Image (cartoon, rainbow, N blue to C red):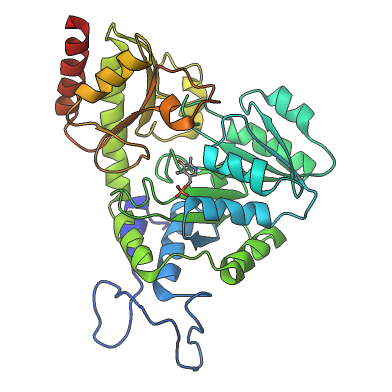
Length: 373
Ligand SMILES: *Cc1c(COP(=O)(O)O)cnc(C)c1O
């Protein structure tokens, strides 16, 4: 019988070691291993804690293998580095800005890139070229929580024999499993939900099969060397054990808060795929198991009104990033810089695991304070 994700999360990343038989896999700090049959060789190329983390992540995403990196960006970069020079890449017009900067700046002159609206299948279809080697999707997207149809895009990619990668960071494998919907590769910034406690940086790629592209990615991991430390792998494998239950509560809390905000007059829009008012709610329901913990909203007023509202909150910390147990909030345009297309009054929320009533009370008191001024 195949195991359920709650069980995989607890057991698959906990390799049993001989000797004193600890129940929890110890951290192996050694960078080298005695030359013996079956032993590992060297810490950059392999490590028992990294192996354990890769095993549990591959199983949670229903993939064949995983490769862990020192950050989400390093994981994404390994995919771009694995493409033959001159390859054409199709990426979302609202791609995570760190990865967009890689494609635009670091890979300028090496890869050709077009940024397209991944919600517009016709636009995507007509953007393919003979040299297209990779389609990259990110769903739900940042900061408007747009949904791309992974099944439909994977059919387009299969017909053209082009690899499809999905940045699944906002969803987590508990909410969405892109490999089962036809993607070839999945990326997570494990800095976010996988780590879940805002205290470590990491990234992971998961593959559906051992393709030549994957072999190249594996050698970029091992020879390029942007690998996570054993400590980080240990803490990630530990965090993964509670990921299924954390994701349930993130999604439950987020749905409560989205409904509350949608009924609040000073909030002019709420972008959350779990709300029937979200333009792609039905599509989201066909490919996501729940709707995750991320949402954005428009606050009535300008940038300084929006900042005043955020400053008044007590439980939501004004900080970037997402996926931790504590709720975070930020005005995205302030983070994205002057050339952003994000509205100045758009606020992004990472809903944490505090009690939802406390979170709603905090939002309500800040809204009332701003109204009475
Ligand atoms: C944070 C993030 C990344 C990059 O991950 P780092 O760990 O910060 O390098 C990539 N994609 C998405 C959607 C992210 O939120």
